Image: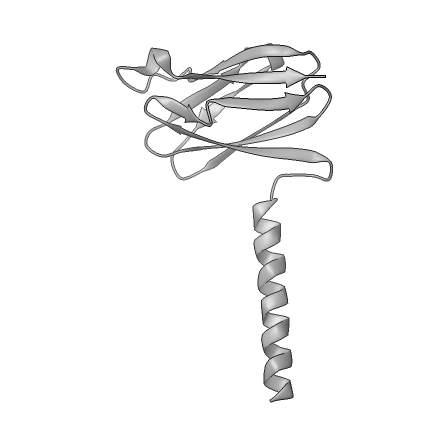
Length: 121
């Protein structure tokens, strides 16, 4: 009985370590990971907040078609393909409100696909 409990406990600990490692893949100590979902014709969440100087990792996924992610004020740009996670690492160096957009045509309504990054001190 003790051996079974011990084996079960070790298994649960290993499962927890594997799950934890998968959830922070791509992130380093001191980085903040923000998950975004792109789908016709919106980003969710549509507004994200960050602190100036905070290292941000955006993990963006698509629920439908290939989208673009463009945050030009911080030089962030890339394609977001269905079934994959696009990671964008950057450090905001100024405060204010900044618009991010889909810059890959994804259908009628594409021109409205945008969101806001608000950076505070």
